[in-house]
Image (cartoon, rainbow, N blue to C red; front, side, top):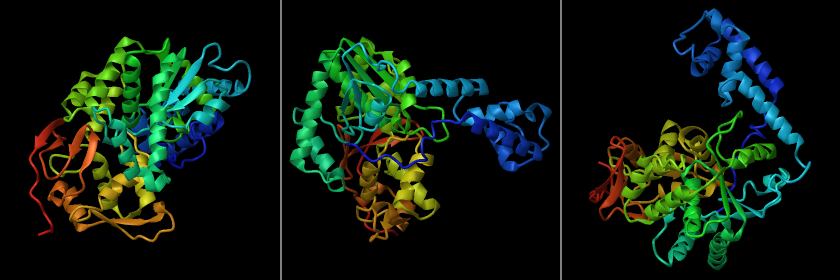
Length: 440
């Protein structure tokens, strides 16, 4: 389902070269003065400063060129010349907006994305092709190898998102059927361009699309995929991109052949299986036909209950954020997305669904103040049970939280449950945890 984007500073991926030159000069001056923050930046980003433990700054690092390298690497580029080249390419792409033929002219083109976030920006960037949104978050909830799998998806989406988004079951079911029909019909297009990110949300939907195309591919199937982009903020998703960036990414698209289609079909089958070994095996293979897929599958497996605490990784990160200090619900979401999550994949609606699960079970792991005017303002704090689970002194499944689904795997407290062994990076089937109703 389409979710609201995380609020961010306006266009952090549209760089001002003069501003970056000034930042480099300021950094060089501060480092020469022995400013501790400046020296930390050098240690983090300059290859010759890793062992730097304080002033004075060595002559080789006191030059402006050294500070420029630090600034370039902070922005996600390997050198200052590459930063200058990127700035010029973005500037040229911006000048081209609205001028000349559309970048996708000449062929019947469908742009396919797991959300609607870039649709208006594609138009502003001058693209003329049709747009298809396929937005079911297959990374959460049941995904079953049955003909009625869509009915189970609708039931899950109503539970997770229905009240928040004001959905009606009949309308949601019709929408999902329409998406599936449009995906099947996409093969009739001359060219289909897939726009995806590296995270588990996007990569599992990409696998679904490739599985659909495996038996009947379009004449040309192309992929735009990325896990970073030069800029002054953490890369979260394509929705952050200004229109000129989409034109640059368009030039980097690559064709997908039989190996990628076969791999997508294999992932789709493994996602729907009642055990996770197939997904982990594909993750360990490196998935060379789709290089972002293997890390995403490994991250997906980390949503299984931990073998020691019973927490999925997202649940653990939420509790760690609150263990540091009490926060508003919105602040927890931002802390998770911008700082703690190794591979941001979660929109605000599913986040709220996952967080609310931590309020359930025999003993809640967190509590909220309630009564806030907006969901993001509710103040949250960790409970005693939450601290015990986070420390590994208590198993979350022993408190009998509601059962949940991860693809084809039902995760429940009252039957043997697939878990993630973080130390061995392996999955394991564990017997039910002894039930607990109170803390000793």
